[in-house]
Length: 341
Image (cartoon, rainbow, N blue to C red; front, side, top):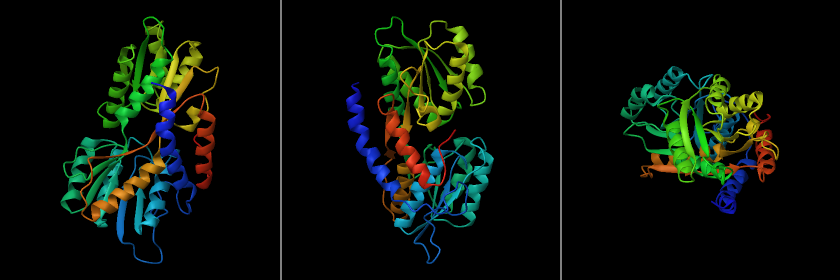
């Protein structure tokens, strides 16, 4: 697909989201604080919204909280933002959901680490009359109001199409998918989108490997040894992209292309004219947080929501990475911190 199409499609969406976040007053936005920026201290809020994120740390969650907080202030909604220390602690998420149930919030927005583990707690919330909205990662809860986040299948497929174009004309072009937790609906959707995007552009998928941030480098070294003529490694998360990058560099296999997903700044900084890292698909967490609050307000008002409310995404590659990093850092400066390193 023509690069100009992706620029036209995503540029307007990203600009709108950037304008939203540049206008923020960012007091009290650190991840895991009891109240986010939308908190009402001098009057009673119209609505109590609880957010249960996957982690307290990372630019993604900081920007999502900031977007939610700004929109909460606009809509007179009080935001409680909770998260475990790490993104594999589903048990803490369950406790946080129960806390919000006890506090009788109106809406819970949740990014489930494990849909299976969180399902009973979310069912308890729904039974208590609390609206439930999935954010960033979907849930199978029947009573869910909507899913707010990236269209993971479409975004991953778009990135795979761009990555496949770099292999155009290469006989027997092939790839390996490096993916996150099996059973995680986000990674499942991304893997499916990647596989379809590659297949439709003549790239053969040799295998898909479940990996973790701590094991990504060793997993990729094993892949490089198994496939001496490998053309591409493509990931479902930039936490994996980091380890894959180090493994490729350490192995001297810079003929193998690498493409990521998430738009982490520490990954995007490695995209250059002489790098084997050719790009990453960036999500828009600030816009995601805003849309989650908008959806929560609508649901609490009895409005029927669409099945999915999608936030924008962007293909980040050589010709736009400098501007992407500049804009992202400006947003993080508003939050009083620098990008992930």
